[in-house]
Image (cartoon, rainbow, N blue to C red):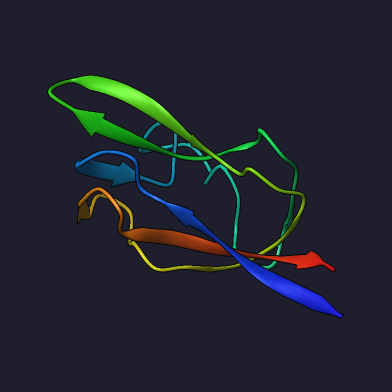
Length: 83
């Protein structure tokens, strides 16, 4: 049995799934993630803040595309966790 945990944006800005344009994504859908693992970045006025998983589990979906603008409180991704 599993439960779904959502990663919520703490800031407005541009969301990046990659650390640089020519580098692979931090994590892909379907991959295992661990508490504290970076899953993306949010850029606000040339300052970058890491977005991290706050539970262990499987990242099942991203709801934001790379380089999309996001608002505070917007869902970024879902992680399935064992109950």
